[in-house]
Image (tube, rainbow, N blue to C red; front, side, top):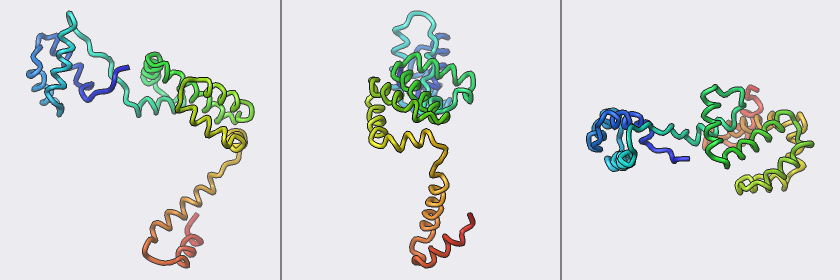
Length: 196
């Protein structure tokens, strides 16, 4: 997969002008500046140099999705992605076996979490992750192994600590609002009388 570049959004225009016979990098750079390009002439010159090596008309390579886009696609429910997003994710997965394997692990974990299959499926998922050649996931698996009973319970039982976390967050917010203003007695009163 090619790395993303600031020039990516301008490559279709460059290729169009190249196909029209405009092959001078300085002229293309001037046109790009009028279209909002703030990069250097050397970047344009390097890309034009690559075009010189091709014979005949050129078509721009498809734009490389941003890391944030790929992450969003991987962490979203497949049904919530549009047809275009699904097609682009499929292209990314086809072009990078590492991301394809990662996507499979993410989907399996998400299914285990939403269906509360921790007791039945966590051990198998950990075994598959540890057998895979992805060091980042190995450290995740090692962390889960250290507290596997709690993780299994979290992935199996309907209980969670959401309400407690909400109360802790509320108390911290009130405490931050009061820094330098008063002592513990006022903080206590504000926490007790704060609307739920």
